[in-house]
Length: 391
Ligand SMILES: Nc1ncnc2c1ncn2[C@@H]1O[C@H](COP(=O)(O)OP(=O)(O)OP(=O)(O)O)[C@@H](O)[C@H]1O
Ligand SMILES: [Mg+2]
Image (cartoon, rainbow, N blue to C red; front, side, top):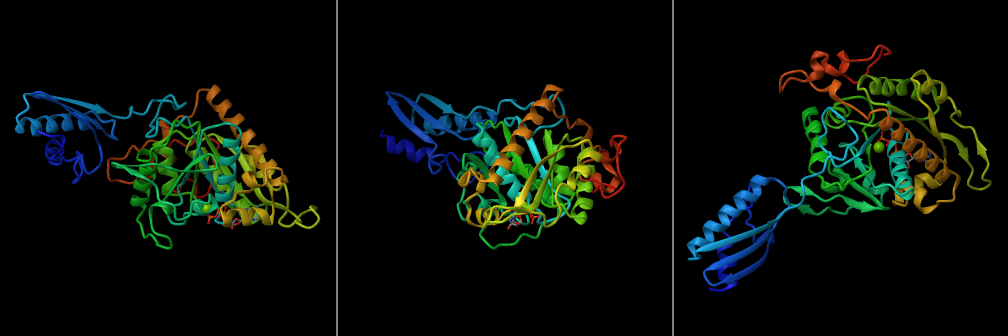
């Protein structure tokens, strides 16, 4: 009897839920023959007890067929995620993450992804463990902005390792599909994708997961709010009136979804001339403050138009990391300090809670088609308008 014979026999043990076997997956780490006893060590990627039990049973059966009277199977599995989240009740499908930050805007192209990238990096530079989830399934831009374009993640069993750049863990639909491919998905598939991004990505025990949303107020936003307790919502806007009108819809959505509003980031607020460093007013400046205060929220940062921000995004060299002394980087750091202080405040007051926005409709029926829990639970201070898409 040799180790090779045993390895050959173990190829008959498929990994539960897969067609591949534990040898092909590379999970068999050690084989020892001690007379009529075999000792097998297996490393698996699932923390589910039923996976462990199934493999033990199948390995034992295969080795008994070879004539072993005793079989010891040692299985090393990752720990089940610890409940670290600051939420006290409600639903949380990514409990190893302490705080979730949703970055939204009413309008497209106002700088959500740019803000998400730079805020995430600023928080990581301030010593936090940070993740960045690109929840813009149709228009995933984060991989390019983080310098991770074309980099494919490592798959472990049925989970995916996040990529890492600038001290930030990152995952995006753009990292999972070929460049230039388009997706034509129904709303229900978007909702499933968001859930999988939270459940099936091997996020570390993060202090903060920043989530870059698609523009508007729809299925993605509602699913996220129902899946995890969002600690802080950020609205990105430009100073023009047309963008501010749409921002009210995002602020209104946060209220309806019971998401504490950290504040508004006014992007493209003034222009810093690259030749003379002078700041001039183009789209208006400071106009978002009044809209923020209608919702009791702060203006947490004013970020100017600066060509280096666009170049940083296009080349995957974010300004906060690559030009830390620039005026813009300082403003992102201010925004990140404000955000962290807000998160502390929310947690000191009991933490985020999404129990009021759980679907009350039977499975398969969209909460949106009936008005849903989110809309019916809306606090008294609500505005007319699109809201979370439920009404
Ligand atoms: N303050 C700024 N100065 C200069 N360029 C900027 C600034 N903010 C964003 N940009 C550039 O504007 C473009 C749009 O920004 P971004 O992709 O972040 O917007 P978005 O709101 O995420 O868009 P979408 O709604 O399509 O997801 C990008 O090319 C980005 O580099
Ligand atoms: Mg974007």
